[in-house]
Image 1: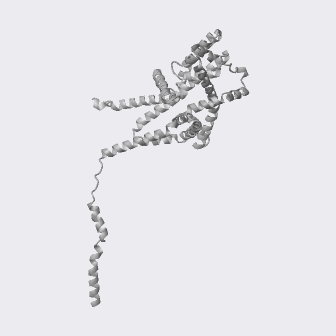
Image 2: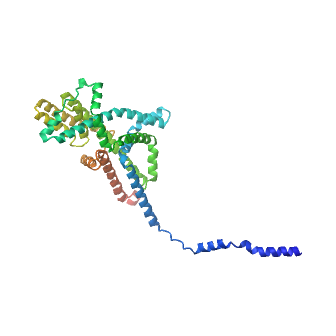
Image 3: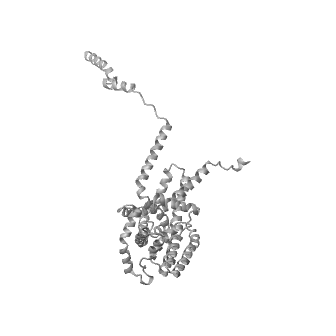
Length: 385
Protein backbone atom coordinates (compact mmCIF):
# COMPACT_ATOMS: atom_id res chain seq x y z
CA UNK A 1 0.00 0.00 0.00
CA UNK A 2 2.84 2.31 0.74
CA UNK A 3 4.24 1.74 -2.69
CA UNK A 4 0.82 2.29 -4.29
CA UNK A 5 0.28 5.49 -2.36
CA UNK A 6 3.68 6.80 -3.38
CA UNK A 7 2.97 5.90 -6.99
CA UNK A 8 -0.39 7.67 -6.94
CA UNK A 9 1.15 10.71 -5.26
CA UNK A 10 3.90 10.87 -7.89
CA UNK A 11 1.42 10.61 -10.76
CA UNK A 12 -0.73 13.28 -9.18
CA UNK A 13 2.25 15.59 -8.88
CA UNK A 14 3.26 14.96 -12.55
CA UNK A 15 -0.19 15.14 -14.10
CA UNK A 16 -0.44 18.92 -14.38
CA UNK A 17 2.94 19.06 -16.17
CA UNK A 18 1.63 17.07 -19.12
CA UNK A 19 -0.78 19.82 -20.17
CA UNK A 20 1.46 22.83 -19.76
CA UNK A 21 3.45 24.20 -22.71
CA UNK A 22 7.09 25.07 -22.18
CA UNK A 23 7.68 28.61 -20.98
CA UNK A 24 9.50 29.63 -24.16
CA UNK A 25 6.68 28.34 -26.35
CA UNK A 26 4.01 29.98 -24.22
CA UNK A 27 5.86 33.24 -24.49
CA UNK A 28 6.14 32.93 -28.25
CA UNK A 29 2.44 32.15 -28.51
CA UNK A 30 1.55 35.12 -26.38
CA UNK A 31 3.79 37.39 -28.42
CA UNK A 32 2.29 36.05 -31.66
CA UNK A 33 -1.19 36.85 -30.48
CA UNK A 34 -0.13 40.36 -29.54
CA UNK A 35 1.44 41.18 -32.95
CA UNK A 36 -0.82 43.37 -35.15
CA UNK A 37 -2.21 41.68 -38.26
CA UNK A 38 -1.66 43.81 -41.42
CA UNK A 39 -4.89 44.75 -43.15
CA UNK A 40 -5.66 43.01 -46.43
CA UNK A 41 -5.24 45.10 -49.59
CA UNK A 42 -8.41 45.99 -51.44
CA UNK A 43 -9.14 43.91 -54.49
CA UNK A 44 -9.02 47.02 -56.68
CA UNK A 45 -5.45 47.81 -55.61
CA UNK A 46 -4.37 44.23 -56.22
CA UNK A 47 -5.90 44.26 -59.70
CA UNK A 48 -4.26 47.60 -60.52
CA UNK A 49 -0.87 46.34 -59.39
CA UNK A 50 -1.30 43.17 -61.44
CA UNK A 51 -2.23 45.20 -64.53
CA UNK A 52 0.80 47.48 -64.18
CA UNK A 53 3.05 44.49 -63.63
CA UNK A 54 1.65 42.78 -66.70
CA UNK A 55 2.08 45.95 -68.77
CA UNK A 56 5.67 46.38 -67.59
CA UNK A 57 6.55 42.78 -68.42
CA UNK A 58 4.96 43.08 -71.87
CA UNK A 59 6.95 46.25 -72.58
CA UNK A 60 10.14 44.55 -71.40
CA UNK A 61 9.44 41.54 -73.62
CA UNK A 62 8.80 43.82 -76.61
CA UNK A 63 12.06 45.68 -76.01
CA UNK A 64 13.91 42.36 -75.80
CA UNK A 65 12.63 41.01 -79.14
CA UNK A 66 12.39 44.36 -80.96
CA UNK A 67 15.80 44.12 -82.70
CA UNK A 68 14.71 40.86 -84.35
CA UNK A 69 11.07 41.62 -85.10
CA UNK A 70 11.63 41.68 -88.88
CA UNK A 71 12.86 38.06 -89.29
CA UNK A 72 10.25 36.86 -86.78
CA UNK A 73 7.47 38.62 -88.69
CA UNK A 74 8.71 37.29 -92.03
CA UNK A 75 9.01 33.80 -90.55
CA UNK A 76 5.41 33.90 -89.30
CA UNK A 77 4.04 35.11 -92.63
CA UNK A 78 6.20 32.66 -94.59
CA UNK A 79 4.93 29.79 -92.44
CA UNK A 80 1.35 30.87 -93.12
CA UNK A 81 2.00 30.92 -96.87
CA UNK A 82 3.85 27.57 -96.81
CA UNK A 83 1.25 25.82 -94.64
CA UNK A 84 -0.50 24.08 -97.61
CA UNK A 85 2.85 22.63 -98.77
CA UNK A 86 3.62 21.48 -95.23
CA UNK A 87 0.21 19.84 -94.90
CA UNK A 88 0.73 17.90 -98.13
CA UNK A 89 4.13 16.68 -97.02
CA UNK A 90 2.73 15.61 -93.66
CA UNK A 91 0.17 13.44 -95.45
CA UNK A 92 2.77 11.88 -97.72
CA UNK A 93 5.36 10.95 -95.09
CA UNK A 94 2.98 9.39 -92.61
CA UNK A 95 1.97 12.31 -90.42
CA UNK A 96 5.45 13.29 -89.21
CA UNK A 97 5.05 17.02 -88.85
CA UNK A 98 8.64 17.69 -87.77
CA UNK A 99 10.19 15.96 -90.78
CA UNK A 100 7.72 17.68 -93.10
CA UNK A 101 8.66 21.02 -91.53
CA UNK A 102 12.37 20.42 -92.18
CA UNK A 103 11.69 19.51 -95.82
CA UNK A 104 9.49 22.58 -96.30
CA UNK A 105 12.06 24.92 -94.81
CA UNK A 106 14.85 23.44 -96.97
CA UNK A 107 12.78 23.75 -100.14
CA UNK A 108 11.85 27.37 -99.44
CA UNK A 109 15.39 28.39 -98.44
CA UNK A 110 16.92 26.71 -101.50
CA UNK A 111 14.41 28.46 -103.75
CA UNK A 112 14.95 31.87 -102.17
CA UNK A 113 18.74 31.76 -101.70
CA UNK A 114 19.67 32.68 -105.32
CA UNK A 115 17.14 35.49 -105.33
CA UNK A 116 18.50 36.87 -102.07
CA UNK A 117 22.12 36.77 -103.32
CA UNK A 118 21.26 38.49 -106.59
CA UNK A 119 19.03 40.98 -104.79
CA UNK A 120 21.76 41.93 -102.32
CA UNK A 121 24.28 42.28 -105.14
CA UNK A 122 21.96 44.52 -107.13
CA UNK A 123 21.12 46.46 -103.99
CA UNK A 124 24.82 47.13 -103.48
CA UNK A 125 25.04 48.44 -107.03
CA UNK A 126 21.95 50.55 -106.41
CA UNK A 127 23.60 52.08 -103.34
CA UNK A 128 26.65 52.99 -105.43
CA UNK A 129 24.40 54.50 -108.09
CA UNK A 130 22.55 56.55 -105.47
CA UNK A 131 25.84 57.88 -104.13
CA UNK A 132 26.86 58.84 -107.66
CA UNK A 133 23.60 60.70 -108.15
CA UNK A 134 24.07 62.57 -104.87
CA UNK A 135 27.53 63.72 -105.95
CA UNK A 136 26.22 65.10 -109.25
CA UNK A 137 25.83 68.87 -109.54
CA UNK A 138 22.29 69.35 -110.89
CA UNK A 139 19.34 67.53 -112.35
CA UNK A 140 20.88 67.29 -115.81
CA UNK A 141 24.13 65.96 -114.36
CA UNK A 142 22.20 63.47 -112.27
CA UNK A 143 20.39 62.13 -115.32
CA UNK A 144 23.68 61.93 -117.17
CA UNK A 145 25.28 60.07 -114.26
CA UNK A 146 22.33 57.69 -114.26
CA UNK A 147 22.80 56.72 -117.88
CA UNK A 148 26.49 57.32 -118.59
CA UNK A 149 27.71 54.22 -116.75
CA UNK A 150 29.17 51.32 -118.67
CA UNK A 151 26.50 49.26 -120.42
CA UNK A 152 25.11 46.32 -118.56
CA UNK A 153 25.41 42.74 -119.74
CA UNK A 154 23.32 41.87 -122.78
CA UNK A 155 21.04 38.88 -122.79
CA UNK A 156 23.02 36.98 -125.39
CA UNK A 157 26.27 37.45 -123.46
CA UNK A 158 24.90 36.51 -120.04
CA UNK A 159 26.38 33.26 -118.80
CA UNK A 160 27.59 31.70 -115.56
CA UNK A 161 31.01 33.34 -115.82
CA UNK A 162 29.53 36.79 -116.25
CA UNK A 163 27.14 36.12 -113.37
CA UNK A 164 30.04 35.16 -111.08
CA UNK A 165 32.00 38.25 -112.16
CA UNK A 166 28.95 40.40 -111.51
CA UNK A 167 28.53 39.03 -107.99
CA UNK A 168 32.23 39.50 -107.29
CA UNK A 169 32.11 43.05 -108.61
CA UNK A 170 29.28 44.02 -106.30
CA UNK A 171 30.18 41.74 -103.38
CA UNK A 172 31.38 44.57 -101.17
CA UNK A 173 28.30 46.58 -102.00
CA UNK A 174 26.07 43.62 -101.20
CA UNK A 175 27.71 43.16 -97.80
CA UNK A 176 27.42 46.88 -97.11
CA UNK A 177 23.76 46.81 -98.15
CA UNK A 178 23.07 43.83 -95.88
CA UNK A 179 24.74 45.59 -92.95
CA UNK A 180 22.73 48.73 -93.67
CA UNK A 181 19.42 46.90 -93.78
CA UNK A 182 19.95 44.71 -90.73
CA UNK A 183 21.84 47.30 -88.71
CA UNK A 184 25.06 45.51 -87.71
CA UNK A 185 27.81 43.37 -89.19
CA UNK A 186 26.73 40.16 -87.46
CA UNK A 187 22.99 40.86 -87.43
CA UNK A 188 22.50 39.38 -90.90
CA UNK A 189 23.57 35.94 -89.76
CA UNK A 190 21.55 36.22 -86.56
CA UNK A 191 18.52 37.39 -88.51
CA UNK A 192 18.86 34.54 -90.99
CA UNK A 193 19.11 32.00 -88.16
CA UNK A 194 16.06 33.48 -86.43
CA UNK A 195 14.11 33.43 -89.69
CA UNK A 196 14.90 29.78 -90.46
CA UNK A 197 14.33 28.55 -86.90
CA UNK A 198 11.18 30.66 -86.57
CA UNK A 199 9.92 29.45 -89.94
CA UNK A 200 10.23 25.84 -88.78
CA UNK A 201 8.70 26.58 -85.37
CA UNK A 202 5.68 28.37 -86.80
CA UNK A 203 5.15 25.56 -89.32
CA UNK A 204 5.22 22.77 -86.75
CA UNK A 205 3.88 24.43 -83.58
CA UNK A 206 2.14 27.52 -84.94
CA UNK A 207 -1.40 26.32 -84.34
CA UNK A 208 -0.63 25.16 -80.81
CA UNK A 209 1.09 28.46 -80.03
CA UNK A 210 -1.87 30.43 -81.35
CA UNK A 211 -4.23 28.32 -79.21
CA UNK A 212 -2.11 29.19 -76.18
CA UNK A 213 -2.35 32.90 -77.05
CA UNK A 214 -6.12 32.65 -77.41
CA UNK A 215 -6.40 30.95 -74.03
CA UNK A 216 -4.16 33.34 -72.07
CA UNK A 217 -4.93 36.63 -73.79
CA UNK A 218 -6.76 39.25 -71.69
CA UNK A 219 -8.93 40.01 -74.70
CA UNK A 220 -11.94 37.83 -75.47
CA UNK A 221 -11.27 34.91 -77.76
CA UNK A 222 -13.48 36.25 -80.55
CA UNK A 223 -11.63 39.57 -80.58
CA UNK A 224 -8.25 37.88 -80.68
CA UNK A 225 -9.46 35.69 -83.52
CA UNK A 226 -10.41 38.75 -85.56
CA UNK A 227 -7.03 40.39 -84.90
CA UNK A 228 -5.35 37.15 -85.95
CA UNK A 229 -7.34 37.12 -89.18
CA UNK A 230 -6.24 40.72 -89.83
CA UNK A 231 -2.62 39.68 -89.24
CA UNK A 232 -2.91 36.81 -91.73
CA UNK A 233 -4.68 39.05 -94.25
CA UNK A 234 -1.91 41.64 -94.05
CA UNK A 235 0.79 39.03 -94.61
CA UNK A 236 -1.00 37.53 -97.60
CA UNK A 237 -1.79 40.93 -99.04
CA UNK A 238 1.73 42.35 -98.70
CA UNK A 239 3.77 39.30 -99.71
CA UNK A 240 1.48 37.95 -102.44
CA UNK A 241 -0.82 40.76 -103.51
CA UNK A 242 1.64 43.68 -103.37
CA UNK A 243 5.02 41.91 -103.36
CA UNK A 244 4.41 39.46 -106.20
CA UNK A 245 2.82 42.18 -108.33
CA UNK A 246 5.85 44.41 -107.80
CA UNK A 247 8.20 41.53 -108.64
CA UNK A 248 6.39 40.87 -111.93
CA UNK A 249 6.47 44.56 -112.82
CA UNK A 250 10.19 44.69 -112.05
CA UNK A 251 10.79 41.57 -114.16
CA UNK A 252 8.98 43.05 -117.17
CA UNK A 253 10.85 46.33 -116.76
CA UNK A 254 14.23 44.55 -116.48
CA UNK A 255 13.62 42.56 -119.65
CA UNK A 256 12.61 45.75 -121.44
CA UNK A 257 15.65 47.69 -120.22
CA UNK A 258 17.97 44.91 -121.35
CA UNK A 259 16.27 44.67 -124.76
CA UNK A 260 16.49 48.44 -125.29
CA UNK A 261 20.10 48.53 -124.15
CA UNK A 262 19.67 50.89 -121.22
CA UNK A 263 22.77 51.12 -119.00
CA UNK A 264 22.41 49.70 -115.48
CA UNK A 265 19.42 47.65 -116.65
CA UNK A 266 19.49 45.14 -113.79
CA UNK A 267 19.88 47.85 -111.16
CA UNK A 268 17.09 49.89 -112.70
CA UNK A 269 14.92 46.77 -112.77
CA UNK A 270 15.47 46.28 -109.03
CA UNK A 271 14.66 49.93 -108.38
CA UNK A 272 11.49 49.50 -110.46
CA UNK A 273 10.50 46.57 -108.24
CA UNK A 274 10.96 48.66 -105.09
CA UNK A 275 9.10 51.60 -106.64
CA UNK A 276 6.22 49.31 -107.61
CA UNK A 277 5.67 48.58 -103.92
CA UNK A 278 4.46 52.16 -103.50
CA UNK A 279 0.85 52.42 -104.67
CA UNK A 280 -0.27 55.00 -107.24
CA UNK A 281 3.16 56.57 -107.80
CA UNK A 282 4.82 53.25 -108.50
CA UNK A 283 7.18 52.50 -111.35
CA UNK A 284 7.00 55.99 -112.82
CA UNK A 285 9.62 57.02 -110.26
CA UNK A 286 12.16 55.05 -112.33
CA UNK A 287 11.17 54.91 -115.97
CA UNK A 288 10.21 58.60 -116.26
CA UNK A 289 13.71 59.91 -115.27
CA UNK A 290 15.33 57.22 -117.44
CA UNK A 291 13.27 58.28 -120.45
CA UNK A 292 14.04 61.95 -119.86
CA UNK A 293 17.75 61.22 -119.45
CA UNK A 294 17.87 59.28 -122.70
CA UNK A 295 16.04 62.06 -124.50
CA UNK A 296 18.43 64.71 -123.20
CA UNK A 297 21.35 62.50 -124.18
CA UNK A 298 20.21 62.45 -127.80
CA UNK A 299 18.86 58.87 -127.76
CA UNK A 300 15.33 59.75 -128.73
CA UNK A 301 14.46 56.31 -130.03
CA UNK A 302 15.55 54.65 -126.79
CA UNK A 303 13.70 57.34 -124.82
CA UNK A 304 10.47 56.60 -126.69
CA UNK A 305 10.96 52.86 -126.17
CA UNK A 306 11.46 53.33 -122.42
CA UNK A 307 8.37 55.54 -122.30
CA UNK A 308 6.30 52.83 -124.02
CA UNK A 309 7.82 50.22 -121.72
CA UNK A 310 6.87 52.28 -118.68
CA UNK A 311 3.27 52.49 -119.85
CA UNK A 312 3.19 48.70 -120.31
CA UNK A 313 4.68 48.11 -116.88
CA UNK A 314 2.11 50.43 -115.32
CA UNK A 315 -0.73 48.58 -117.05
CA UNK A 316 0.57 45.19 -115.89
CA UNK A 317 -0.46 46.19 -112.37
CA UNK A 318 -4.09 46.47 -113.42
CA UNK A 319 -4.12 42.94 -114.84
CA UNK A 320 -2.02 41.11 -112.28
CA UNK A 321 -3.44 42.54 -109.06
CA UNK A 322 -7.08 41.44 -109.68
CA UNK A 323 -5.87 37.93 -110.53
CA UNK A 324 -3.82 37.72 -107.34
CA UNK A 325 -6.65 39.18 -105.25
CA UNK A 326 -8.35 35.78 -105.39
CA UNK A 327 -5.49 34.37 -103.32
CA UNK A 328 -4.51 37.39 -101.24
CA UNK A 329 -5.98 40.84 -100.81
CA UNK A 330 -5.24 43.60 -98.31
CA UNK A 331 -8.45 45.42 -97.40
CA UNK A 332 -6.96 48.90 -97.18
CA UNK A 333 -7.75 51.87 -99.43
CA UNK A 334 -4.95 52.82 -101.80
CA UNK A 335 -4.31 56.15 -100.10
CA UNK A 336 -4.22 54.57 -96.63
CA UNK A 337 -1.80 51.90 -97.85
CA UNK A 338 0.42 54.56 -99.42
CA UNK A 339 0.51 56.64 -96.24
CA UNK A 340 1.12 53.52 -94.12
CA UNK A 341 4.08 52.44 -96.27
CA UNK A 342 5.69 55.88 -96.50
CA UNK A 343 5.08 56.56 -92.81
CA UNK A 344 6.43 53.13 -91.91
CA UNK A 345 9.62 53.82 -93.86
CA UNK A 346 10.04 57.17 -92.12
CA UNK A 347 9.46 55.65 -88.67
CA UNK A 348 11.09 52.22 -88.91
CA UNK A 349 13.38 52.34 -91.94
CA UNK A 350 13.13 50.01 -94.94
CA UNK A 351 11.25 47.34 -92.96
CA UNK A 352 8.51 49.90 -92.36
CA UNK A 353 7.05 48.79 -95.68
CA UNK A 354 5.78 45.78 -93.73
CA UNK A 355 5.30 47.18 -90.25
CA UNK A 356 3.40 50.32 -91.25
CA UNK A 357 0.54 48.55 -93.08
CA UNK A 358 0.42 45.87 -90.36
CA UNK A 359 -0.06 48.39 -87.56
CA UNK A 360 -2.64 50.34 -89.57
CA UNK A 361 -4.62 47.21 -90.45
CA UNK A 362 -4.61 45.98 -86.84
CA UNK A 363 -5.63 49.44 -85.60
CA UNK A 364 -8.56 49.54 -88.03
CA UNK A 365 -9.72 46.11 -86.89
CA UNK A 366 -9.36 47.13 -83.24
CA UNK A 367 -11.49 50.24 -83.87
CA UNK A 368 -14.17 48.08 -85.49
CA UNK A 369 -14.19 45.71 -82.50
CA UNK A 370 -14.43 48.63 -80.08
CA UNK A 371 -17.29 50.21 -82.02
CA UNK A 372 -19.23 46.94 -82.25
CA UNK A 373 -18.78 46.30 -78.52
CA UNK A 374 -20.30 49.71 -77.69
CA UNK A 375 -23.25 49.41 -80.04
CA UNK A 376 -26.43 48.06 -78.42
CA UNK A 377 -27.40 44.57 -79.47
CA UNK A 378 -30.10 44.32 -82.10
CA UNK A 379 -33.50 43.46 -80.56
CA UNK A 380 -34.63 39.89 -81.07
CA UNK A 381 -38.07 38.84 -82.32
CA UNK A 382 -39.50 38.57 -78.81
CA UNK A 383 -38.33 42.00 -77.69
CA UNK A 384 -39.39 43.55 -80.98
CA UNK A 385 -42.98 42.50 -80.37
